[in-house]
Length: 110
Image (cartoon, rainbow, N blue to C red; front, side, top):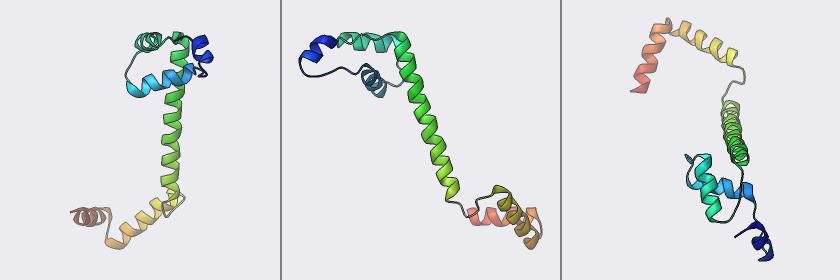
């Protein structure tokens, strides 16, 4: 079905969404495979568009990963990592050194 045929049927073809759908079904697909699968459906796309949409998908994944890391760091007790290191060093001094602190942590991990 061509874009014109789809528009006459009341459906518009969003080529970018069609590319995203192919990548959702097969994330490892190369651009030639994507173009061939969409050509079977009557959607014509260029390799440049496939590469562009793939890069935007990767960008969205990286952004989501950064947001998850930022959120987890907000949930920690200490906002400042230097403060956290200083507190660990103080704790190590209290228990008799870093070796003893490590032994305690190993015992707790068991």
